[in-house]
Image (cartoon, rainbow, N blue to C red; front, side, top):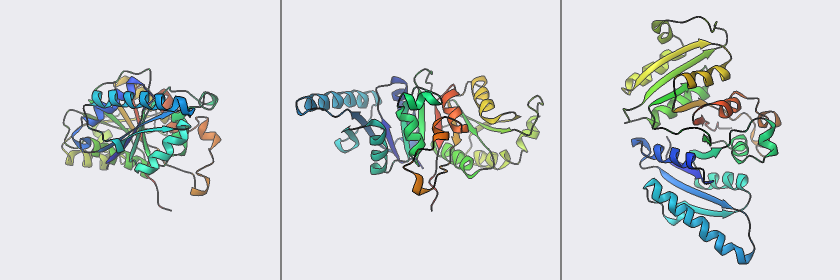
Length: 283
């Protein structure tokens, strides 16, 4: 399911470490990886030096990853980083964009010209965001946030695809129902029979993967983040549907840019890398 990965390199070591961990999974070993380094437009005299420096940085990253990237998949582009990432993601037809993130919230993202937030807002592709201030670990505990939406189902599918052939991870199937009393502790049997989790459990069992169920009440975004912290989660996956019609794709939605959606809250507050699974819906 993830066959083409675009890594937009900002030099952040956390994001580089996450890419390395991801490429060690059996399911992604044969994925096509494009590494993008965006540099500011230079004068003719400065351009050659800047290009050489950027290529050297990519070379260091390729050596760190222990992978082979030919010239076609290692790109140095001049331009505005946020628009260049979007352009290259289209060109390479990326299934997943991986970027570092400062975890800025609300108005800060706009005022500081946040590249990751801009790309997340406008892309129709899945994104893996890695904050600068979190500790990156091998994937042992992977949480999938589930609800009734097709986006959540796609989040599960992309998780199972990533973990195919990998037996070291445990999947935490998580359902936060705002109608439930958060102070009520459900039994394991009650959680496994939950109508949202039951089909997901069947899929996980067919793959022979370890799992746990988490069903609770509360405000979904806040509760998902607190559960991720309490369970020491290494990767959080949730569906993040693209809601805007094609005609509006070039027009940023100010409400979402300001961080009002569940996806925005979680990308800012989650204590671990966040994979926002986004599947383009045919018109």
